[in-house]
Length: 405
Image (tube, rainbow, N blue to C red; front, side, top):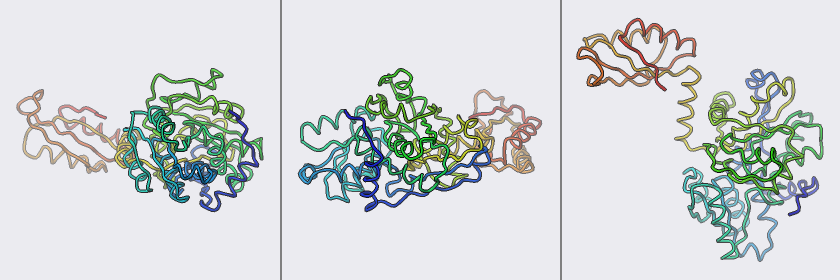
């Protein structure tokens, strides 16, 4: 397959997509800039009509189909964002779409794709299994298969974001994006390197789904035995050789991040960036912390590639993030089973400036003595130092105390 993607082709993609999509915002973030000692700008692809950059490549691909191909309809495989991109583009151009999604796809993404008019088939437990099924159906029905990343027109569409970045911040030093299949960084990197080759490109993958990182290291496309990350938008088990060849000369720095770091980035973007990002959308920010020594004093663009996160996942991320930040504490305490004892404990907590979010009182715990009772507490504090002081005060007033997570 020809891996040639040119600046002129991306510029043509922009001319076409300008009829359908607005330029996404590029916002300076003072808090992140101070924290990382550089100038951080967020490229908010989560502000696209479907909440993801995938709308660019999918829509451009559909505009490139012949009228005969449009009549056949299109099919795609996706964990969610590409699905919505194909569904949105199909609706704009009057094309019927069928999307194969893994059964593990986030409910919000399935519902949003259906709302855009696509027919949904749930199949398999991973993107790769859904991909195989979609290709099988395409061969049987003649529908046009729209690849999420391994397609030159899709890459050209994604590359339009790179043109926007250079117009919004002409003297940018670094651009970092997350990689699943690699379409975003391939397109953005091609556009940016063609116009300003001195700009450094960084690419980030989840540690549990680092198929492209392994492929770059080994010099050939590599498949993982399994993927293990909550960032479903970048959970690709088998890397593409086509994409590896495009990415290899474009990316200056490859970064792997753990799910805990991605979750922390989701929380940071929510609290400090006032924007909602899904795991794959926040991975680039997590990666930025891994190269902070290289970006000090530089102008850096972080591509927030998507914001379609399940609210239940977001709630868990917030909860876990606050616990790890020392702003939420969970403890089990054992106190004397006497009237007024629990009231004294709650007053102590209030005196320390903490708030009780939950209290579960259990007098029947078998491991306790007859004159003891156990209370499981979830407490909100102002920070780790306050939490440590609170725990020390509780130790003086209870029989036993155990920190839980």
